[in-house]
Length: 200
Image (cartoon, rainbow, N blue to C red):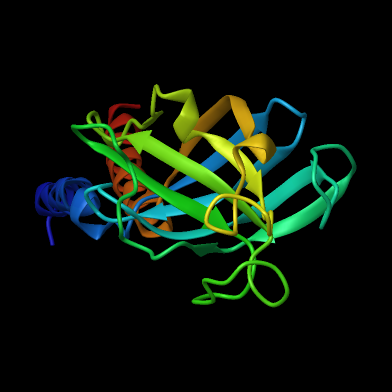
C-alpha cells in the first residue's frame, strides 16, 4: 500500500470513529450530589433513559442522618439503590420535568419500614436542555424524607422533610465512546507524526 493510500485510510478510520461516537453511547449516566438543610448528603450515580425523560437506575449513599429515628442529626449512612415505581412521573410541573423517589430498601417492595424502605429522596429534574440537566426549581420537589408510620398515608410526614440546599449533575462519559475518541485521535496523531518525519 502506498503512503498516500495509507494516510487516506488513517484519515477515513479517524473520521468514521469520531462520527459513530454518538450512536455508540449507552444510556446516559450522571454523578449526582445533593446536600440537604440538615447537613445530610447524597452521593451516587443515576442512569437515565436515552432521552433523559425518566430515571432507570440509581446507586449511591445517603449520609449524615440517624437511621430509624425521626429528625436529621447523626452520622448514619444508608444505601439508596432503587426507584419508586420506576418510569412513573410524580412531577407536577409542566414541560420537560421528571420526578421520582430514590429509595433504600429491597427492590419492588413498596411497603414502609420493617422489610421495606426507611429513607427516600424526592428527586425532580428539568431535562429541557439535555444532556445538560438542572434540578426542578420548586423546592418542595427536592428533599430527603424519612419513613414515619404516623405520617400522611402512613409513610411520610411533611415535618420530616429535609430540603435540598445544593446539588449537581456531572455527566459520566461512556467507556466505549472514550475508546473510540482515543482511537480517532491516535490515528490522526500518527498521520501528523509521519508527515513531520517526512519533512525532516
